[in-house]
Image (cartoon, rainbow, N blue to C red; front, side, top):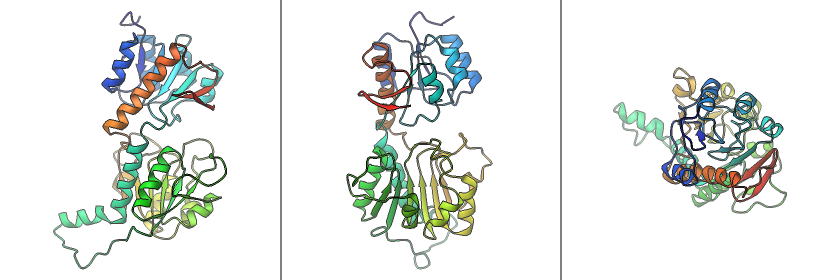
Length: 333
């Protein structure tokens, strides 16, 4: 039985921003949270305990089994962020569930994180920091790169990629982008559009990834693609684990084909303690925290909360199989 008489919005994580909790509570909902990275068993137990009318999805995988346990009470699954790869969209469509996402809410914070990784690697700061700790003074023995004039390739030119383009251009970088999901024609902002992924890779002294994870992008940056980069390229990945083939990236780092890689996302999260991705000397890993700024966290959580309230109140129609971006724009599942 539910622990409260109020209808519940179940959060698939250990915490939700107070601003989002306040929105949901003001609309008359209880807001129970699960543990971090809940398993399917955790999700099923939470659904049984709280009998939610909506799920606010942060972590874990919501597949058909979880959806079936939540039906018929749950009407909407709201994603805490833009990526919906943790939700089985065909299963949601088959069950008539509405899935929402807080598109664009974290775009600035993720773009800033991508730039921070990029700049630190282009200036060899991880190595410089380690050398200083060892007592070295490399004033005359180390040379870093000029950022002004470097070529940046963006795989994806949505809300995040477009912001990275503008930030990089402010540093004097020459920016190109490949994004087959956008309408044909010139891109807004400083990025030059290129027609193929291969053309993008061939000119990318820095490659920054900002595309969704789906069947077309999973494993799309593997050994063959990394080999097309100029030797000594830098890779920045703040999109979704699974787009980059991690074994191929480690091999490219070992060979020097890729000089540095900065990863905020991984194919399996949390990243195992013994993973070589934690320990490779030419790789800068961060724990999927690019969106974790006050503005980013609040924007994602309140966007998800507002979409739940809107769908349950009938202000955003619960279209079968629809991904509804808060504000009313719909993408086909």
